[in-house]
Length: 257
Image (cartoon, rainbow, N blue to C red; front, side):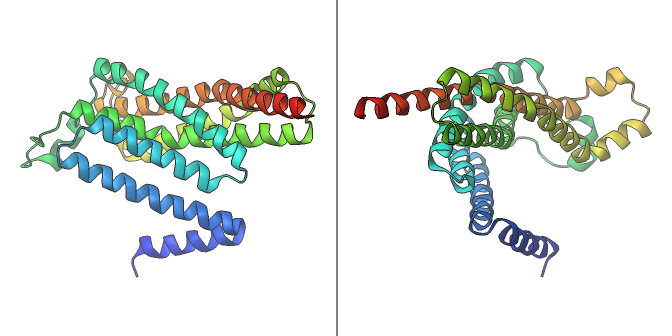
């Protein structure tokens, strides 16, 4: 048994012990998401357009993550709709910025590993960079939208007489509380994943300017910024979607009554 298999089994057992049926569903969503990501890589390797593939796979991953992890259908639907809006806005933001910063491809730190290998893969590296940035933001978007949707749905159930505007304000309040934790999560994810790169910088006595302008560090840092921007955008959009859906349900119930 390999180490990855053993850790996967331990993860499954812990998720079942803590989350029960929802834990199994979350584990399945993780497996399915990995499968779709791998399938997307295969399609890109066969020179299919990366951006349409990324958009389709991104929507599938969002739906699996949200609907298999959610506990309430209404909250899951609201979170999914909000995530789609945020995904579209991020794509509009990511494409011009990635073309502007030009951090695609490999840096000088990869030169030893790539020596003797051909970089003529038949796909523009800028397209791969755009796809990577989009896919890297999906987890943060889904997490933020589900957190806000679940919280507001609980508020709406406990206080059915609440006004939609107040529900929107409550959503912004909930969002403010998750921004700090999300920022720390993304920051430590960047630091942990790039620790060897930082040791490289320290060993070669890179200046602060050299670190900021390094292609590898710049690509990772920009992805983290995209994810944080996505979370911030998710807060008002999810709050607006839920308050609007709540207002429609409230008006329907009043008209029937």
